Image (cartoon, rainbow, N blue to C red; front, side):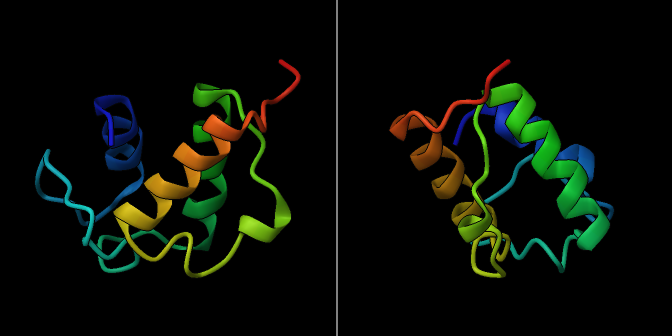
Length: 84
């Protein structure tokens, strides 16, 4: 995961008391709730210029730092770009 992703994610995690995230970190335990997911998704889409398809909006995607990063990385790599 890159530093930009970590910075965006940390801004949305209420209970993250560190500046370093690990792929296995549980996002809900760090304070990410349903409203936070929507805001986080918007920030990630704007920053990485991609569109999060409905089928990626699952509990598994937003379970851990690593699962979210893999989803974002795969969508950006696949060209699921937004019309910005």
